[in-house]
Every structure is written in C-alpha cells, then in structure tokens.
Image (cartoon, rainbow over all chains, first blue to last red):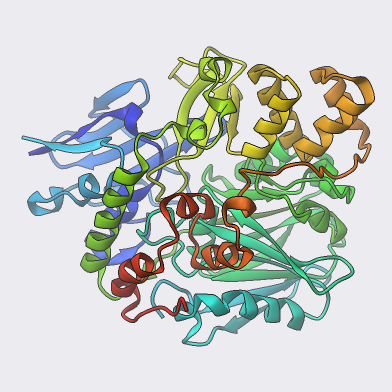
Amino acid sequence: MRLHFEPLACVACGLCEMTCSLRRDGVLTPMSSSVILHSEDKADYFGLVLKSASEGLVFVRPEGVTSGQQASDSGGPGAKPILLREPCDLCDGDPKCAIICPTGCITVEG
Amino acid sequence: MYLANGRYAVLDLSSGDVEEHELPEAYALNPRGVMAVIDSAVSDAGSVGIAISSGVLTGSLVPASCAGFIRFPSSGSENMRTCPLTGFMGVELKLTGFDFVVITGQAVQDGYVWIRDGICEFVPSPGIRELNSWERTDKIRSDQGDGKIQVIAGGPWGQHGIATSQLTMNYWGGEDMVGAAAEFGRIGLSAVAFRGMGELELHDAEGHLSRSSSLMRSQLVSLGTNDGLASFSETAARDDFRKLLHRNVGCYACPFPCRSYYKVHEEPSVMTLDNREPGCLVQDVPSVEMMASLGMSAMETIESLILCARYGAEPMASVSALQAREGKVDIAALEAMLMSLDSPEPWVGSTKGGFRESFDDHRDYELCLSLGLCPRYWARVGFDRDSIRSVAGPAMGAEIDLG
C-alpha cells in the first residue's frame, strides 16, 4: 500500500496535514504531521511534502511528483521541519489523509 | 476547553502593554454569544478598539471552518462592523494561543502587531508606513523568517484614513467592505501579523474526523463540480477569464473553492515557480461583476484588482470613480489615481456575491462567522444547524447552542 498523489487536484485546503496530526497526537495542529502543505501564495505555487517510510521525502509539486530529495524549505525556520517529524505509517492501513482529501489529490493504491 | 484556547489578549498600542484575560468555560459552547463577548472586551479596553478573532469551530475538520473576523465599532455610533477573514487567517490566528486579540490605543511609532506562540506584541518597524500592502507582507515575512505568516495590512490608503480603503489579506483584497483599513490607519496600525504553531484539543478525535468527512462527502454531492470563482460568478465563466485561469485555491478545510488565481504576467499554464508575482488570487465577486458591467476585460479586471490590493483601495469605489471622471478605465490612470490618494465616494451599487450578502439575515451571517465557518460556503450548502451540531459534538464533548 502507498499513497498516490495527483498534484493538480490539490486546492491547498490543508486538511491532510491537520488530519495527520490529529491521528498522531489527538490534537489539531499542522506541526506534527508527516505531510506538509507548502505554499508560495503570492505566486500561487503550492503542493505537498510527505515524509514516507519507504521512499524518503515525496515532493508533490505542481509540475510533478518526485521523491528521495532533501527538503530545502518546509514552512520556514519557525515551523517544525519535516525531517524532524515521524514518517508516514499509512495510519496502520487506513490513511486518514486520503479519507479527508476532498478533491482526490491523495488516494491509496496497492 | 475544547477547540479553544480559553483566553484573549488586549494590546494597547500607546504603551505597548498587553493584558491577557481568561474566557468563561461556556464560551466555546455558545457561538451565539461570541460577538457579545468580543464587543464587551472591545468596550472594556477603554478606548475604541479593534478585535481580530477566530470562531468557535475555526481550525476544526468541519467543512470550510476557515473563518475568523475583524470586529470594531463604527465611527460615531455603537454599531459594530464585521469583516470576515478567510484563507488560513482564522486557523493561523487560533493556533497562536489566543481565541481573539483586541488592539486599542494609538501607535506612536511605525510598526505592526505580531502574534504567535502565546505572545502578542507591538514590533517597531521604521518605514513600514511608506510601503504598500504587498511590500508590508513581504517585509514582515522576511524579517520574521517564515513564509506562512499571515499579514493583515492596511496599505497606503488605509494609512491615510481614506474611507474607501480596504485591508489586504497577505496579498489579496475583497473581504474588507466595512472600512476596517481606515480604522487601522486611524490608530496608526500598519499591519497585524500572526503565525499559528500551537494545538487545539478535542474530545473525540475519531468521531469528529468521521462525522466531518461524511458531512463533507454529502455536501460535495449536492454542490456538484467545482469551478472555482466561476462557481460563484457568471463573469468568471467568460472565455477571457478562463484563458487567464491558473488554478483554483481553497481556504482552510474548504472542499469547494470560490477562489481562482489568474496569471496576467506569465502564461497561465506555467506550473513552475519562475515569476514570483505572476497574477492575482480573486474571490471578490462583487468587484468582478461590477467591472464586467463597465465592459472591462478579464485582463483589465485582474490588473485593477492587483493595483487596488497593493494600495489597499476598495476596487469598486476606485474603478467607478475613474470611470465617472474619464469615461473609461485605463490601468495607468487607475494607478495614478491610487497614487494620488484621491478619496473616491464609497460604492453604493450592488455588492451581490459578497460575503456579507451570502445570507439574507444578518444574524445568520454573524452566527456563521462566530462559528468560524465560511459564510459563502455555508450559504451555498445550506446553513443546517443540525449538521453543524452533529460534527461539532464529538469535538466539543457537548452540544453547542445554536438556538
């Protein structure tokens, strides 16, 4: 099982990162999620970064999905960098981000 | 207290002093009383103040729980004015550790209010009053080192107290139709910035997720296919708008975006981050419709909205004044007018499609904002109190009072 991403389906609602943290820690916060919404709002450039257990970092950019690279920016120095976060555990087989994603940007395959 | 911080701050710009106050336990369970609590806090602040607030369900998983609001007394009367906050403003504010902040007094130096991590303070920033709204957001984000900081900027028009000024939310306009920018200018406030890195507890996380997800799915079925701004504006469905469309963008927790980003300084289909200022995020339905009524093209409309956002000017008043004076709207002439700080008459025509016009009953509008829910979304899907109680219940551990 793995998460599948359709980058251009993302509308930057942020529900995936909030739901991920909720499942992990039982609280609403974007600070402990394994997935981060990255946004350059003035240029309308946005996408997701996932810390996966099997593929390293997965970058869901508007121009496509890549994996395995180091994060150069995960929300600024004031935020908790993704490299310090726990990797995605696929919610033990029932990924909550895919359940809550309203647009089909995040789905489950395999 | 679930889904709430249980406290608010009062910042006196004159002295820089900050007082923190506890909120009563019942605060989050009584959305109908939220405005009264805030109005009382503003009144208690001693001089006329401005409250910047999240709502009871802001930051939850309830569909479109993005909203916050600005609340302040109308000049010369006891009536309160309310400006919605959308995007990520509401949730970022709530995660600062305060449910709302009241700003009072008079700033004696250039600067902005900075709220984060349970801290609320006035930060001196020499020269910020000379910057336009976009530059203020860029500067604050750069100085504080975080691109996700939310900035409510007054802009040059607000700084000069022009009645038809408009607050710019990060970079975009359209929400402030009540003169909040002029109020910022009156107290010498250049901007309010905040970043939420806290957390909100809830009673039953699994139950809240399950019910919120189910409600969202059922609402999406009734809403049909989303078309961004064009789902809310006939004009945005025109071919010339579609040719400039880059992407549709949701606010926090919104499954049915009303915001579309149009690129006018770069090919709209470009998906890489090449141009840092390629266009404009538009949610201002009344302005788009008003400019269409003047025969303006999509390009002229977007360019006008960008200029107005930079200067912090209300677009309908500005464009209609130029049209009346010159018989047409030329972008260069619009910029010259905005630079001149000539105050136009307020727009008195239709504001259909605006946030405030989402509901026929103003009490529903204010209750929706008190809940932290987007009025535009909830008016579209139906402001069903039973559904809201159902999704809020697991989060709050009790039934909220919606009358």
